Image 1: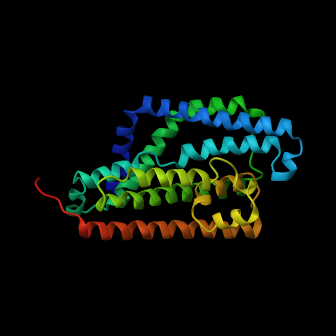
Image 2: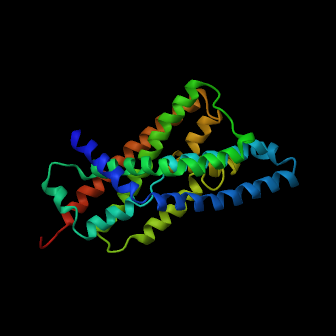
Image 3: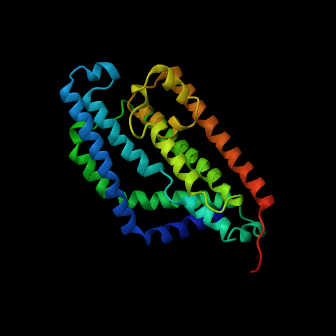
Length: 268
């Protein structure tokens, strides 16, 4: 374990070199968020019955997007998939085949160190954003709910990372995987609840989406915090999220094992 803590330390140092980049990225990410907030506020003001139709009051809907920003800062995969694909194309993974270090855990340590650095840089603009909409901010209903939310948040980060890692493994077979990454990102953006809460969809489509891992990447932890999932539904949801993490981990391991068999590097 000592070597992986060392990786996290190195990752933090490397990521802090790009703190201005992180700050700029955070600021620009708020632009579409403000646009969505303005859109929903207009919808609620123009149609007073909208809240009764979708199960959200105006305050709850605005708070939902505040939580989207918070969860995204804490769990999103930024450039890890691109870096993994680059390591494969350029032959940098050869050293991991010869040394007693697991590449998946190495990349996971870098992912978490990147999240820590990003949270540190995004804390100020995120705090300003929350302050601007502080009248809509809702505290968790109780300590247990908040604790379950934090646990779900960890699984959310793991699920996002393992899916991105598995996607990056396509670099063993393909020279350029950017198209697949963009397709996955677009689908995640829609199906995870990033663009809108999934329970505004028709029941049939909502149930189909919950058969996929995507709602557990954003929508599910937010629902826990807001107290919209409780009791047996919460227990089932947590079990399903853990199951998807295990499946994604297994798939990531499978893609690595198959890719390494095809991998070849020359020179040195």
